[in-house]
Length: 315
Image (tube, rainbow, N blue to C red):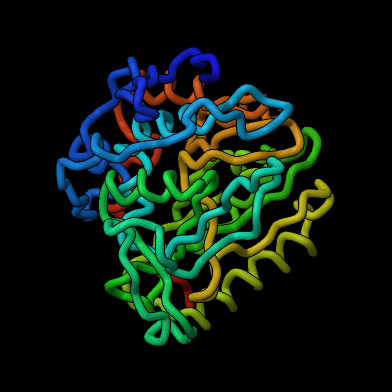
């Protein structure tokens, strides 16, 4: 068995991970902030999900084990699920050689009975995607070696109407936070409040929630216009590239609280309040154990109030 990292739970002798030692809020409390409308499944079966080979190290350069990943997602589920549940998902698994596989968006045998299939054709795609509704489904994804989790910008129930704009700011030197704040101001000029998170691999994501009624084409056009205006204006001089994420039914963006593997090591896609961004060292990823400690101290979701916003795109 691999050693137990600070902030993670302990492992049982049967390969199953036990609940960690940090007390996190219930899903009900977590979803009362940013994502109050999400109805999370509570099947009571999450503790029955078994993880074999829990002590196997995933990466030669990091002591993180398969059991640590399971413990992390079990503990952080109250914060992660309200954003990820009932959305098309993609996962990136760790290959036996420690490399991250390409994002997997297709449902397949072996993902578990609480990882639900859905037909992509209402969203304009082919094949069968997958989604989860609760903790058991999340842990079954981890059981299938999921390491990074990504979600679409629309829900399963309303596949033709995206409810968020996600813009990614690529990793860069010091001006990264300044570029994100400038992007926030630009969105505010269009009547859009936004929220920020660490991407987990050195960049930032700026997310603006949207009320029902926006279609994919309008989302794409607005995102392109914002990026073009940023590049052409004074903000473009900061040298930070902005990309539109999850602007089609076939695209996804990293979920808040997902693990990431970046150039500087293992990190977490951590949501922040805007007031916390300026003092945050963006050159150092938030380690999983540190993310759990921060989550245990949270009194409210850093994105509290998101679900109450009823904002739409201009035009």
